[in-house]
Length: 220
Image: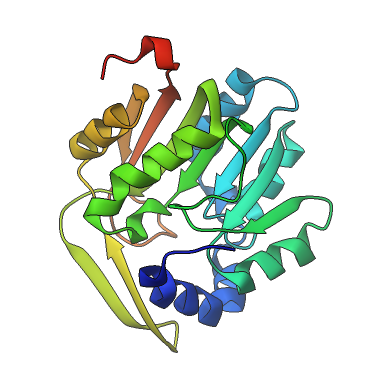
């Protein structure tokens, strides 16, 4: 699968922490009521059985939740170890190795997509191309749910849960993200912020729900 070489440190880092990540994060939706509500809203608007891309799916826990609530998810992750865990834990679902800049999917394959804390690993100049790539694999009118850490700057980890890694977490401004979405062919329909839940890292969280516009509807 084609990938961006600059993303190799992120890939290796998530390969390294995959099992630990699954143990610590794999049940996170159980204590995230707002996330569950937004995912439910996405499923309802996408329609019964709609194919939903889970971009940056990790060990597949969000895809599993989506499947339990009526969607037809396809998980995509940069990390082969994460994809292997997802396939092991959710053998009835489909998971693919892939890069946000080169998604392993056909044009218009999905009715909706979620990208929960996956674009935070992209460099600033990669955000807009990633959104354009997500737009490519969505049907006109398809919804995208984004979640990210609010703020500015970058947090670089060289140690994560006792493992040696090399991964950067970019904090994002929702206004700038909305501009990049608009430029990539989306219109933002909802924008939310919240404080961290007790089980989370102490960062404010941002959510954007955006709809892919058709070519005829685009103004730029």
